[in-house]
Image 1 (cartoon, rainbow, N blue to C red):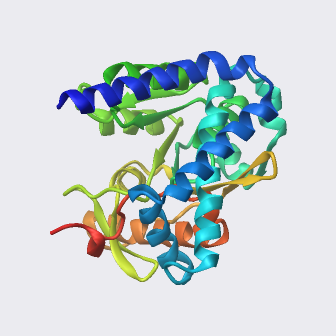
Image 2 (image 1 turned 30 degrees about the vertical axis):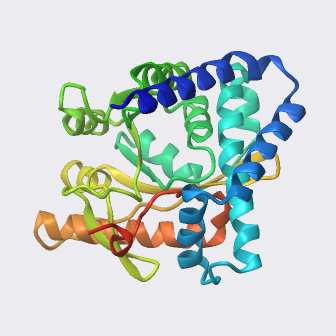
Length: 302
């Protein structure tokens, strides 16, 4: 790592540390306005991340790149993204009752009834809305869960993020650098009737499962569909979005595992069905989809 990259990582880590310490001590509306201002400032510069967001949103909505409509949508997207950061700094100081009250949930019964029957649940989510708030809601209504976290740089930021999520009641497994048995651990959790939550619409590794998504090929993580196929856990897609100052969570019905076919064929079918649900949810709430990276295979450098 270069000295400049290392310095930038330390600055980001210091910013997050300050955010978790200071933002809860300040009035909510003024700090929210500051984060909107920062979002607008970055949006106006139209750097690489904003350009990629607009390219992704153009594919999702059919809007022309460079059009006024797409630019307005990308500004709303950046505001939603920065709202997420503002909210995670406040979440540790919020009462669980307030988080549950302000969460407008469709389909919560799919989790409640499945767990009550002694069967495990795999909640699969795209990068939308506020997934940490959704996790706090899930814990608040009686379902602590396990998840996997990307190992951020520097290590101090990763540890702080893990501590933040564990403080909300999550069990956090590192994506890399752990004991290497994440899938086995998650399988044990759901086989015992527990809940697992996993991001599920972007995985450009060799282990990703190729699907059609908004008319083009991409790869999604194999973990969620593979857990459903191998353990019999219920795979429930969840769409997250903002509702005014509150949050929306739409938990869809279980994606069935085909009765016939090889394991690979079953995983591929489940992954495609999951992508189809995500496609519909993102189409309904494109401004809350935080995809500032390359996603489709044809957009990747050779």
